[in-house]
Amino acid sequence: MIIFRYRSEYINDKNVIIMSEICISKRPNAFFTMVLIFLLSTLTLVVFAELKLIEADGYSIMGDGPEENPVVAQERARNAAKRAASEKAGVFIESMSEVRAGQLTKDAVRTISANIVEVKSAPITVEILGGVAVKYNCHITVVVDTDIVLAQLNKSKDKIEDAIKLNKDQEEYTAKNDAELAELKEKFKTATEPERQVINKEVKRNEEKFTATQLHADGVNRYQLDDLDGATKFFNQAIAVDPLYSAPWTSLGWIHFDRGQYDEAIKCFQHAIDLYDEFAPSWNGMGCSYNYKGTNENRPDYYQKAIEFCRRAIELDRNYAAPWNNLGYSYDKLKDYDRAIECFKKGIELDPNDPAPWSNMGNVYEHLGNSEKAIECYEKALAIKNDYAKAWNNFGYALSRKGDFDKAFECFTKATQYDDNYAEPWNGLGYVYNFKKDYKKAAECCHKAIKIDPNYANAWNNLGYAYGGQGNFKKSYEAYKKAVELDPDVEAYKTNLENAQKRL
Image 1 (cartoon, rainbow, N blue to C red):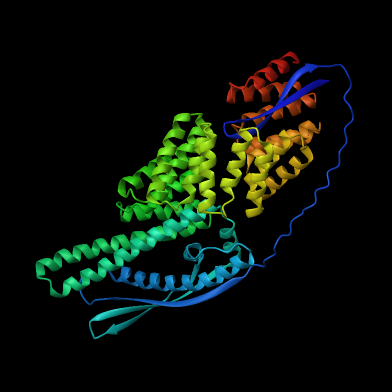
Image 2 (cartoon, rainbow, N blue to C red; image 1 turned 60 degrees about the horizontal axis):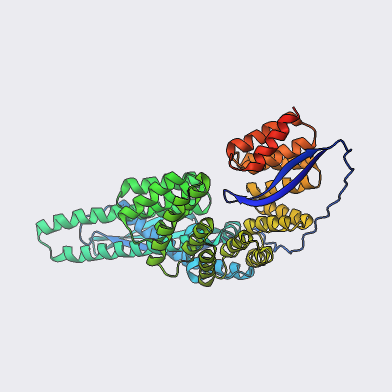
C-alpha cells in the first residue's frame, strides 16, 4: 500500500496540511471503521418571520422662489417621509437586536433601518399655500421584514461599520444639500433678475445632487439585500446624474471587491478618492483590495501598498476599526508578527464585538507556532459570533496540526454549515477523511473545495491523495499535476507528482 505523511503550513493565505507520499509497500490495507456522532452543543434562537407595517409623513414646498422641478420636489417629500419611517423602524430593530443578545449602537440601528425598509405605498397629495406655493405631502407605508433584519444583524462587523460610515456621509451630504437649497431660496427673494438666473442654475445643480443621492440610497438598499446587480444599476445611474459625486464610486468598489474583481475595485476606490479624498472607507477599500491582490498574486509589494492606504484611513478616522484589522493582515503577510498583533489588538479595543481581529490574531499565533494561544483567540472570536465560519475553519486547522482530528472534523463541518461557499473547510474535511482513509468522502469534499475555488492547489493535492488511496492512479497523477501547475514552489506537490507518475 501507499504510506503517507503530512505537514502543515500556510500557502497563499490558505490553511493547508500537505499530504505527502513517501513509499509504496506490499502490506495489505488495514480495515478502518469510524462512526462520528455530531451533536450540536449550542442552542439556536428561533424567530418566526414577521412583517411589520410602519406609517409616517413628510412634505416639501416649492413655488416660493426659484424655478424647481416638481418631480424632484415630490421626491423630496417622499424622502422626508421615508426618513421618518426609518426612525420608527429603528425602535423595532433595536428591540430585535436585544432579543438576539447583540445590542447595536444607535448608529448601526439607524443605518440598518435606513437601508432595509421596503416602501409599500407613498402617495403624494398637493396643497396650495397662499395661492403661490405648492406643498407636496407624502403619507408613506413601509414594511420591515424580520428575516431581512436578522440577515443584517448577522453581517460581518466590518461591513456594518462601513455601512454606518457611508450612511453618515450620505446624511451629511444630504443635509448640506438641503441647507444649500434653503439658502438659495432665501437669496432669490432679494436678488436681481441676472442674479436669479444664476440662482436657477444653482438650484438645478442642487436637484441633480439630490437625485444622485437618492439613486445611491436605492443602490445601498439593494446592496444590503445582497442584490449586487440591482445595486450596480443604481450606482451607475447616480454617477450618470452627478459624475462628481464620490459615494457611488466607493460603493461600486465594494461590489467589485465582493466579486473578487480587485483591479476593478481599486479603480473605483481611486476614482472616489480623486473626487473626495477625506472619506476613510474609500482608503480602507484600497487597502483591502491590495491585501487580496497580494495574496492571490503572491506580491509582497502589494501588502506595502495596503499598509499605506490603511494608514491613511486611520489618519482620517482614528476610531475606525476595520483598517486596523486590514493593517494587521498586511503585517502578518509580511511576517512582521509583533506589529500584526498590535494592530489586531487596536481593532479589538475599538470594536470589542468584532470577531475578525481575534480570528486573524489566532492565525498570527499559528504562524509563530503557538497553537494554544491561537486556539484561545479562535474561541474568543466564536464567543462573540458563534456562526463565524472563518474562525471555525481556522480552529479546525489548528486542531489538525495538534493531531486532534475528531474535533477538527467538527470545526470544519460547522464552518461549511455556516458558509457552504467557503473552500478552505471543505479542503480541511477532505484532509481529515484522507487521514482516516475514507478516500471516497475525501474526494467528494476536495471536489467541493475545487468547485468553489478552482485554483486551490492544496485541494488538488489532497484530491490526488484521495484518488491514490482508491487505487485510481491516473486521476491521482492528474490531480497532483494540477497542484504543481497552480503552485510550483511547493516541493511536496512535486514529490507527490513524481511518485504518482511511477505508478502509471
